[in-house]
Length: 285
Image (cartoon, helix red, strand yellow):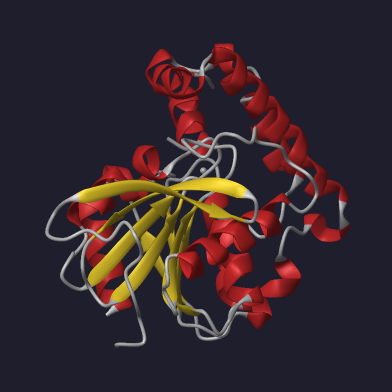
């Protein structure tokens, strides 16, 4: 589960055509999901893969997330005849450890390059991106910087800048001991308490630094460079990413679509998986 899903739980308790070729070494068929690692940019990145469709899709998780924890309903239920679905664990997350996770000023750009290079290592010539939360930011950067490789883009729970209000929310999750047990337990089982707690604190420090930049920009200047068809999904009850973030992304990506889910919160793709998958599959077709 990504960090902003965790915050959602906290807030409840206390007042985020043939051009697609070919399948990589962990190719899977039918409904099976395969798991493997591949060396990319000096690290062994873990990924899961399912489906046999000609349209390749990469799923990008949020902070502290992994393919399995963040995208179970998509790996299980997205159309496997139309799509080949890859869900990755960014370096330092999930099973892509080592290395330990760190947050230098360019960590989103580093993730974007890792993600694109992973798909190329798996021999996909062109692919679409589905990014949630931090993974949505990574997907925006990848679509802007590697336009020849990206077919379509879907993002939700993402922001192109960091405001002082965002920083307040981030600091509210710094101490993981205050998280609800339901949210905390699976992450502690995945990482161990020490790594989980220290990585969360490091993330808060890393992303909060963007608020000190002009306009708080993470990737605002890159949005006009995104030329692929883009769908922005926003849950209107998302307590972690205000509507203006989705509106800003929509306004600055020419030709993009904004789809609102009235009952959606930050983890709308998990809570309303059937509706989400249907909307995304229709867009990707």
